[in-house]
Image 1 (cartoon, helix red, strand yellow):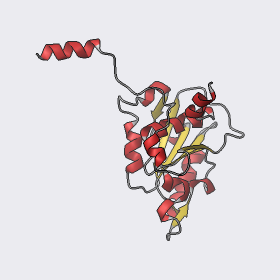
Image 2 (tube, rainbow, N blue to C red):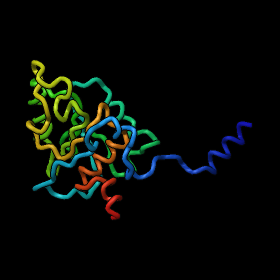
Image 3 (cartoon, helix red, strand yellow):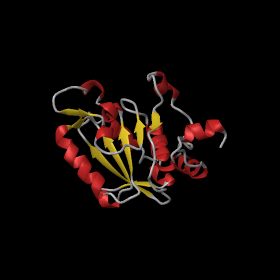
Length: 186
């Protein structure tokens, strides 16, 4: 009996998600705006290599981190798109910031951004990193990330789905959301 399951698993193809060209309709129904917003790539060079991601947690509830961690699972397989995580900002191409940006984290985020080599991208992941969300106006909370470093792409949600995160990372690199590219017929 065991060998039969083993044999069928060999014959069957790997089961991973397809290319992230579809919007997550369940997540989109809970939001008033699109999950992936490209803020701009003005004055930045083109990234045509494997992308190394440096993640900075500015103080979050760990919801965005768990969804970000799912991208390394076999279902989403982040590495097939050329992405990998790096602990060093000097090797990073993309800075992903999650959580509420506090006054104490501002110098840390700026230091990580300055250590990255050009061309570089910055992704604000989650509603807290975009504008502070429910913590906006609280003591010690700076608010959004875009006042600290130039944000390339904002991925909204609390937390955003792994598919939206992958779409946002691809949009940060290419400058175009893959879902919009599919709708345009490209």
